Length: 145
Image 1: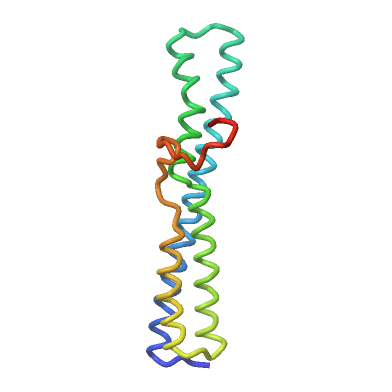
Image 2: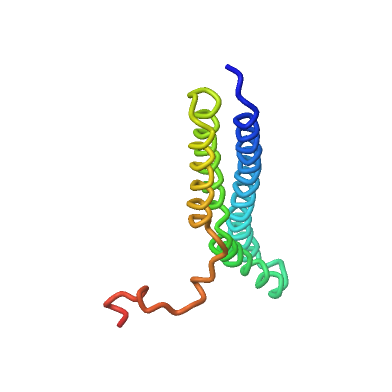
């Protein structure tokens, strides 16, 4: 089945966006793994260094700050959640692309669904979080009041 030019143009636009989301999903996944790995390795390294007491206290203090900083970075930038978001976007874009290419869906319907998907997913994108830095009463439990 050959697509009309409008359908082909829309399919190419969706495919381009899908490939972009695949790249970002991989990139954010790798960053998430590096950050978590750095926290684990720094924690393990700190335990070994502390046991042997061969490094200056300043260096030990710097090493001690790495795991907490890595966890804060991971929480704040949500690399793992961003990776999942991009994978979900890729899967949903693939559904639209397949409907257009193989299921004889109308260009108008897919164009509308594509726009709605972009708007929906924009709202769901995990942005930078500073929640750990702000006081929010709804986070308190009854025992802490």
